[in-house]
Every structure is written in structure tokens, then in C-alpha cells.
Length: 234
Image (cartoon, rainbow, N blue to C red; front, side, top):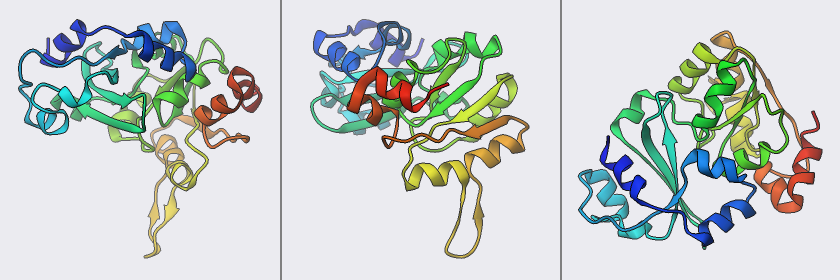
């Protein structure tokens, strides 16, 4: 067990953080599946210099923040996303093994559905994932890539295990659209997008256009379940 797994196993979920998650569209079962907790100050200094630089020797800078563990396909914690629920502050931390693992939020819930042949819906962030779970078929899975980019490890995981379609639901802003469709640099070079990459490895993929908001989280903020389901009428 890594030092991070041990630490997160000792943390609990406070009522204020749980209320924040529910208000942003997370289902109770999603919160429990992801293993989200409220960060508590470490009793011993972290052994990782990179973590200490980010959060302090005892992780004291993250005290009271919401922590969403990121799980590998084998069921081990390879990092987390942390956020301050009072002001906009989001960071992600990765253990060394995250270098060769797909860094997806939602992995634990998604795996059984992927193995059963369900489609995969790809979003950017944690609070795009939770609202979209209300709108897609129960047989399908949602995975968040943390940022608008499919890494080679994301692609390899999907190539190996996804039998259905991959639906891209990145933000409808410049960054998200470029990440989905690719773009041409000022020098005239073509940068491959997610759809290009997915099709290159043999996966059935499509962009999912939607309106009414920049992303599923924005839709949720505007009208909750009804707004998300209206935008993603399936």
C-alpha cells in the first residue's frame, strides 16, 4: 500500500464537502465509489518532495479540501484531484505509477460497464462527469481525463477494453474544441485531436454536440438534472 492510500484511508468525508458534491451533481453512489474524502493534516511528513512542495510537509495547505482519488485499472490509488470548495482552487497530484497508467476520474465505476460492452463518454473534469451520469444510459460509463487531452495511456486503455463507442464531450470552448477536433498551428502544422487519435487506434468515436452551456457542469448549474438531460437527449 502506498503512503497516499494509507493517508486517504484515514480521512473521512465532512458534511460540508458532501453537501458541496451533491450540489454539483454527484450521486451518493458516485461519491462512495470514487472514495472522496475531506483532506486532513498528516501526522507524519509526506515522503514525496513533490507533494511537500505542493501541499506542505504535512499536507497542511489542503486541510479541509475535497479529495477525489484517482484509481488505476488494477484498483490502486495513483493520485488525486483536490479542490477548495470555498474558492476556485484545483490541483492534481500523481504518484510515480501514474506515469504508465491512464489517469481517469471515475475508473472504479466505469470498469464493469466497459467490460460488459458499454459505451464510454469522455469529459474533461470531475464536475462534468457527475452531471452527465444522470443523462446517459445506465449501461454506459463516464470518464474524466482531468484536462482536455487524451494521453497515450488513455488511448491504450480504451483500445484494449472499450468494445462500444467513445463519445467525446469536451467543453465547447476553444480549448475543448481543439482537443476534440485538432487544429492547425501558425506554422501550418496539423495537430491531431482526440477523434483523430481514437480512430487511428481503431475505436468508433464521435463528438457529441450540445447547447445551452459550456460543459455538463455549466448545464447542471443552470437547471440541474432537467437541463443536462435536455442537452443530451438520447
